[in-house]
Image 1 (cartoon, one colour):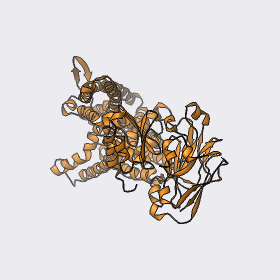
Image 2 (cartoon, rainbow, N blue to C red):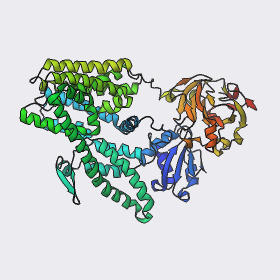
Image 3 (spheres, rainbow, N blue to C red):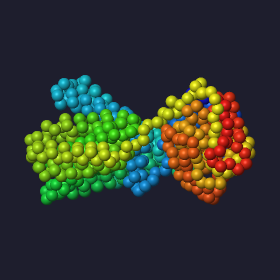
Image 4 (cartoon, one colour):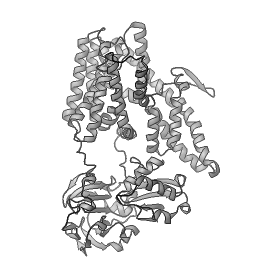
Length: 618
């Protein structure tokens, strides 16, 4: 199946099942796409079965199941690129958000930012270099070349809601283009021009905020859009559904967002601004600690828009703003935490984001790539950055430091802080903030696991399979069942490869071979292992247990991990599986059987885990 074009396959499947409008929902398990169709009769099953890369099609449990095999995640991801279904994050196999509300919020925001991290990091570096060029006089801000380059670097940040609309729409199962239309309205020039004024909609007064570069408003809007679209698709007649759904969605969601999210944000921001301004008059150290510690939190929620006008007004009327001094420790503490991640994380992919993000943060004060791609997802670096910013901000405020120009808090912006208050104290506070953010993250931050996500690419291919023999052991103690007697049409047909089933006597599932985990469903119900000899073994716990969404399964390994024979793969609650109405039979098949000389089931009767179950001739 290596020659299959998976993007074409996804498009052909989409067309074969009656198009996007005929799909209610889409998920995938270890081997098959699981589609819920509005009308099964609109699907060309015979045509779908003939597509290159499709093993078979079956209908079970109210689902239209397209069996693809090990490459099903790839097809699912491609499906997400051409429809509102599929993608990496909205798979049924994605682990449900866990923990408190804040942790779930972090997971949600991180997943929405993930697809745009690399462009975001690139734009941050671009802005840093342009700032450097402007500071040293290499380019003038009035020069048309600078204007063009600045537009190239800043467009992603300015129109950030548009980009987030796409990724949020995938997350919340909303139409991407309708979501983009809503985001476009929020940053429409005439709406931006109303920033800071009182407007009205159909006689209802509301305050207008600046939605450019904002994050939370569009995420909330698209989240609500998903519910609205699903409601409209159910109630609208089919004759008008296709055009009335986006029409009503745009007509409802744009005013609703402007009337609710904006005013609520402005109300909170103004209250925050009043409180911090008052604190600077009676307890500057406390105000500095709040500004330094929580500035990045304010930015994430858009609350900084209530503080920026105060800073600008202070500079215009008094010539300086004490509010800006704590921002330097705040930004550089978070940047220092990013730098520590870049030096200490075992994840090459994380380091690739963290290093340029730290550079753009230190140099130009552009922290979005690092906040959303590094510190916030890892949590601890974000917390350590807050701690450093709070301590450094308190020190900076105690020295009476202030900025006499509105600049991005960064190393390039330092000259704006030299004329007011104690510049030495500001540098001391900033240094302390950097030290706290860096050292705490370096010594106590998450190390992460090495990136072996591409291990399957490095594993032996069919053409490089060694010669000899391999024994595949029973993964669980229980009674062996011939594959043809397994109560699942796809497995029983042998379409997925030769193997057997085991009715388990215990709740622990072990690795039947030594190798690398190539597939590890986060629901814990299926694992694919590639041996050093190139044998691919799938261990599938239960039948249709993907529908349990991880309930009763505790996976013990992750994709890319090295396992030895007998290592624990997962612990399962067999009672929960049976209570849910599913079979707990564990199925083990060699998925690349066709590339091997022979695969012979040898396990019969009652087996203990660790005894030979399959003999393979390479």
